[in-house]
Image: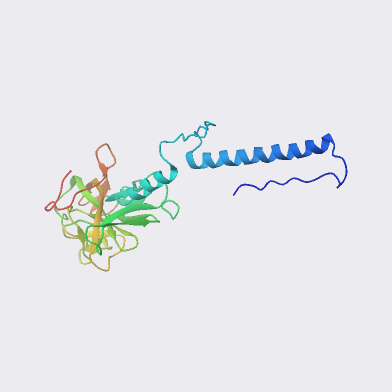
Length: 255
């Protein structure tokens, strides 16, 4: 709501008004108009950004209205995949989800992930992730224990739909549309077969999966100072792919 106009009378009833009285009214009107104009400009800057240019002719300088652009953004939140989710690989033995810009996920900086709906066939649902999620890979071997070292092994970063938010999972086998509770574990020592998924929280039931993408990691079978079955996530060019991954490939999907 605009600021109400308030003029204080500075002369008495049945007296002549002087030039200074009219100047007082004029000054208050001009002051009110300036504040109102600045408030309206501030609204324009808040909505459209600091580079917004006021044309003073009452014509839109944006090609579409703010409401239309918000509607477009909301509709894009239901595209299968993830938004505003990145990886923190400062500790290369971990997979840690953070905001896409490198800041922590929170209620004011949520990550978004869309899943196939389990209740309405053919529809999508979008969940918010409002805190960072992580798993430590050291000790996981997916059946490779004793087979020697591996280089550039693809590991799949998966998100599971809990019905309200998402669980983080990491797997050596890609291509799955859902993950069961029996396939999941939070204990690294239990991830001993190719089909197991290391998760941040064990799901209570079979949950739909959406892939954040994949990373390449090196596997030290023995002898690493960080521990046995030690994984090092690579962070060079071509080592990380954050993007949609199709399911229904058989077995292991290599980059």
